[in-house]
Image (cartoon, rainbow, N blue to C red; front, side, top):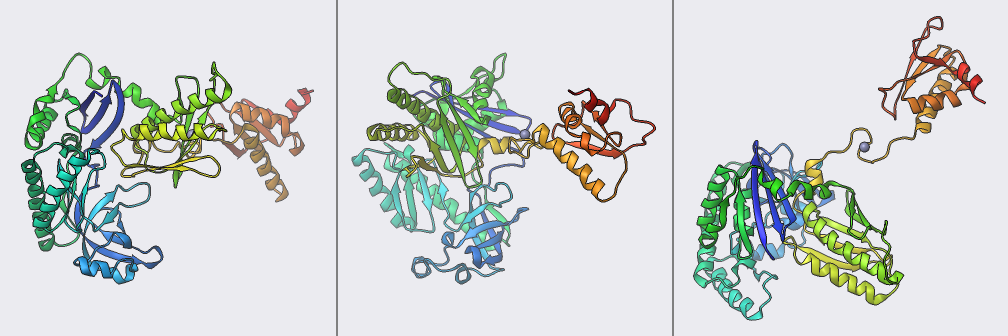
Length: 499
Ligand SMILES: [Zn+2]
């Protein structure tokens, strides 16, 4: 697969796109003042302990308090940690206590960021785990012999440094010296962070994780990336500098690419990104997907739409589901959807087809750098999967709920709005209010008011069709009977005309 990384900057916002075989696969944004928090290490102060949630609020110096669950707390050495495993929050921390924490999940909605006491420091080839004794090798390295070789090096280093280590995918084929250099650099970084933590008053930031540009080089630039392109000179220098420091062998792949049109336009990034912001995604065959985000999970519905297959019904449905599975895997990455995901594929009777569909989905999910877990099919035939959640999905980063419908996508029908207005008139009349009222509403609502409103007293209620009124609203105000406002129609006049 050929990969290209594009980096652009406009008015303080950096945009990064990963292109795979010409198609947009991932898209990230970072703007000044809104840098990501995940990976940052803080010395924080426990504000209050919430026994009911088995968690604590921690002040790390941001507007919102951060959240620390009991399960993410580690205090003291391994022995003490073992004794306290599964302990309630009240036994682990008390308010006023200072704790060294790392942000593991970005804040979202009304929630503050989520913290953990288990620190991880990522390098290019390895991840250092200073608080645990664990040695692991990326599951993306498949060769057993290579896994053993890397594990042996990692175990030696972990023992020397007295910490845990994970060997990253990029380490495949790397020399022992390169790996060791990476471990040692991370270990020195940790010593600095730890020292700063001891001498700094809480709350304070101790370590800022790499910027978007640094992450691109550290985590994405590898053998199968043909080039990293930018048309911004400042970015070019930053990218080259990071590449020289972390991966000099690939530094030559950072290129300056300026032409008549912006870089992202030439690769059709924005055009391709559009589908990530839409609720409906059309499939080539004529079927379509519907994405719905709820508080707890994301639901993807697969629909046949205009699709008419040439073969038998069961094969037609299977082919459509397979196409949907590929597009869903692509959209989950592009949209950066995390958490629980439920997919409602079109029903298939045959067990073998269901199994084959899961295989297709599983295969497509393997391209994802973010960890996914295909859980299986529920009793109702829904496919369950999870994807590691770090950020809010792209659409929630860039869109906010529609003010007219509060994000529901629904507005009251014209008739419902008209009836709301009429019941307000009745309510007032029953209270003995005999004031003549003018109801101003959008033309379709006004039309229904004229049709339905006669029984409420012609002459004392008038309707004004207001072109500028919102469809879901009406305005009611008293008027003088002698001088009806221009444009207002008497309820009676109209009802007499109506057959
Ligand atoms: Zn709306």
